Length: 151
Image (cartoon, rainbow, N blue to C red):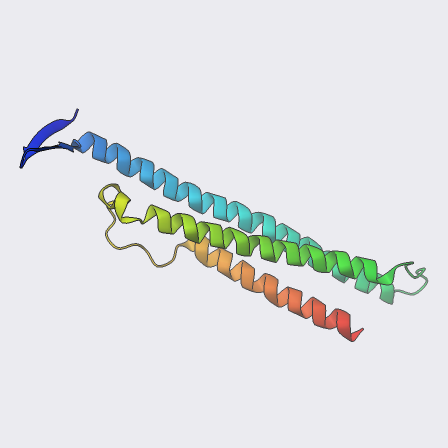
């Protein structure tokens, strides 16, 4: 229930403790949903990066085997694997940018009353893992690109 206060002739509405708790828990659920969404992007990107790397390695080994007929398009598997790694890495970069924008919105001063956590945290485990997977994806992309150019 709302309590109406009069302050210098202007009515102000003050939320009760129950309403503050409800708002705070809604804010926390939204915050955790953002982390879950980021981790889903990490999972998808990891699968794309891993699958691209696996395709690259499989066809590298297949080409080195004896008694194996050479491929008609030897560069096709490399191109597909590079595309998968690139798509996985860049989709994670986009997810990180979206996450950052949304977290900044949640830490907006408008929500200060219901956030109730003081200073905002610098990094969460979800963000740290996403950054590491993104870094790994970039390293793999560069390594596969350099290896493809050398051959």
